[in-house]
Image (cartoon, rainbow, N blue to C red):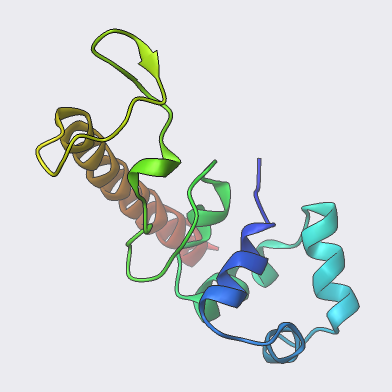
Length: 129
């Protein structure tokens, strides 16, 4: 499933105006709003959007991750609902040495490597056409 609502977040984060961004990708405001509202577009358009926003296409298929650029996902503790120790959901972060944060950081790094590999495979398959 695609999460094209992230386009709005990235446009704001990258300090584009909505109209300016729509023009940059060769669309009208209404066309871009339709993509976001219907959560549907062509792969060519999505590639253009991802390129301009400096994120991999796969970013729009990652559930729950916001922020972008440079491979960083700008994650922080408040975005995680996890169980810690006594099973207290939404447990408070307890400093930089937090075991759960370290585990999550390693998991994110591992997933980013997998996404990079998948992007490379996708590009190789496109070149075969």
